[in-house]
Length: 432
Image 1 (cartoon, one colour):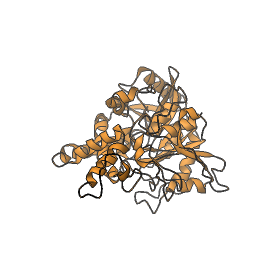
Image 2: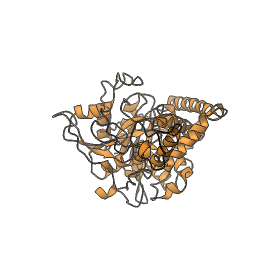
Image 3: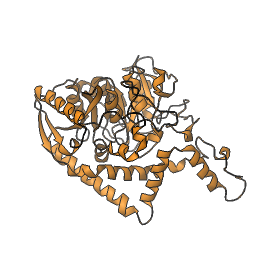
Image 4: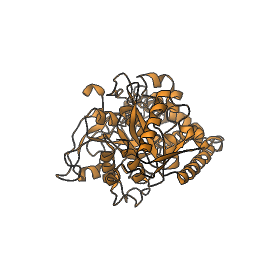
C-alpha cells in the first residue's frame, strides 16, 4: 500500500540474529536518529541529513532482533494532528483513504494498521502517539516521562515528549515497551523503573475490582457517536468486574492553552539551531541569500534558509513561542502556563487517589477528512483537548480501540499514575 505514503524513507535495517523481536518489522518515526539512514523530521530543512549515530531506542530494537522497515512519515517536526504538514506529503488513513490518520505519528500508526509493519515507534508530545492510534484503530502507549530514553530524538518540546510503541494489540505494544523501557546513562531524565519490566504479562484482561474514574470534562463536548462508543466500552469493562466513578478535573479546561504556550516556547528554542549552516538545508544555496562574503549578510542568509526550509505550521509555532518568551510577556504567558501545569498535575494526583485508572475518549471526534484540519489550525489544536493534559502531568496513557462510530475507529484513552503502565495495559487488554 505505497499509496498511503506511510514512509519517507523505505530502507531496511537488520537487527541481531535472535531476540524477542526476531522476525518482527518496525516502522521508526522519522524524528528518531538512525545511523547511516536519512532522518528528516518530515521537513525540507533536514532533507539529506544522515545521522552518525543511532538513538537508544533504535539500538534496543536492533539488539532485540527487530528489522526496521523504514522511517515513517510525520507532521513536520512533530507539529500537527493529521500528518498533513509533512514536506513529503500527507499520509492517508488505511481505514478510509479520504481521511487523515492522525498525527504527528500518522505514518507509524498507518503502517501498523495497513500491515506494512508489525510494530512502530512514535513520539508523543501532546497526543502524537495516541491520536493516530485512535484514528487508525490500533494501540498506542504514551509512557511516563523518563521511562524511555530520548537520546537520539530530535527535540520539539523536551519537557513533554516521549517515545512510545504502536501495535495492533495491547500485548504487542506492551512487549515493545518492555524492549524500550529502562535507564540510559546518555539521558539524565531516564529512571530505573522499567529496567526489569514485564509489561506484556500485564495484558491479562483482569479488571475485576478495578475502579475506573471518568473525568466529566473529558467527555463533555465530544462527538455524539464518540461518546456513545465510549460508554459502551465502559459497560464492557463493568461486565468484567470493573466499576466506574465520575471525577471532576476543572484544570483540564486550561490544558490546551497551557500546552501550546509551553510546547511552542520550547520549540522556538529547540529549532533555533536549524539555521541552514549546521544541518540540512545549506544557507549558501538558498536563492536570495545574498553574498555571504560581505559583512552582515549572515542574518539574512539564516532568515532565508528558515523561510525556505520550514513549513507554515512550524513557522507559526516558532513565532508564537518566541513571543511568549519575549521580555514583557514571559510572566504573562509562559509563567501562567507553568502555573496551570502544576494545577493539572495536582488534579491528576487527586483523581487517581479516587480511582485506579482514568478513562476518556482518546479523540473527541472521528478522523478528520483530508484538508479539514489545515483550514483552521485552532480546530486542530482543540482536537488535542483530551490528550495534552497527560503530557503536562507526566503520567502514562494508552489508546485502545473501543469500537466504531459511523464505520470509523474510536479510541478509548486509559490513564494511570506515574509508572502505572501495568494498570493501563491490564485495563486496555480487557477491551480486546
